[in-house]
Length: 360
Image (cartoon, rainbow, N blue to C red; front, side):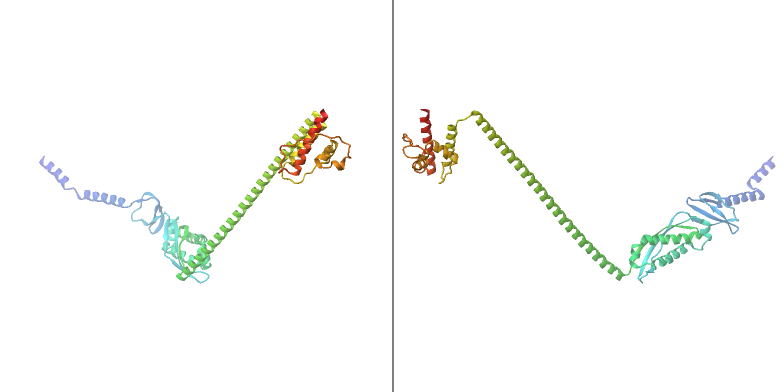
């Protein structure tokens, strides 16, 4: 019993050489497997070789490469890269030397061509961009270079994209970052820019003055047209008012004459009205009076011409008229009354006397 227990303890504490070797082999296999486990991040890839020959590309994920047979050559980024190359000295068509700084945007679309197509793809891209830029600028003058950035970008992008297809690189965009002409050219450009701005300012001021004059002239014209229209409308309104007033006066006179004809006034009343009208005419500072022919005839027919106009001895023979009572003196007539007023007053009193005698 004691011998069996001792053998078990000896085997447990001191394993055999075969067991140790097996354990070591297992540990080595696990270590090799762990060492050859690869995890590829997103937007990257691994280029593998098998016994020195390209075997494939492993993209994002987990894979195990065969130890001692496969080898990871390189891990390539598939992201778009920005390459800011240093300024390049270029000469324009009109022999002006200047520095131009360009920026190239590119990405890898074929990892195999990127690794095996060229020894150093970034250096190749930089040199190609410099030579292409010199070739394009050499065909352009200075002013055209400064104003044709988009054209330069498009030409460089087309040339670089076509040339880098064999390298597995896709050029997505090219931008001219800076254009630095010489100091003397910058001074001339500054003067030219200042002169151009002054010219534009003068042109703008002249245009503004012209627009102001034209606007003022248009305003004056419209004001005069409106004033003329207002004057015309006022004259039309005045003419219409005058025409209306004249029409009303004539209508009133016609209506008065119509009513006067309907009343059938006698000749004596009409003569009296004439005399009253003559009295109103003579009541003033006038030195002359005009007597209508019909009034003079009525005066002669009533036999008062001699007294009113002092024609008694010339117009009627002596002894043809009978003696008439004297005419009463008009209290309204004094020394300041004119001759025509006194004659009109005497005529009125004589007419009143004759009408009184006629009634008797």
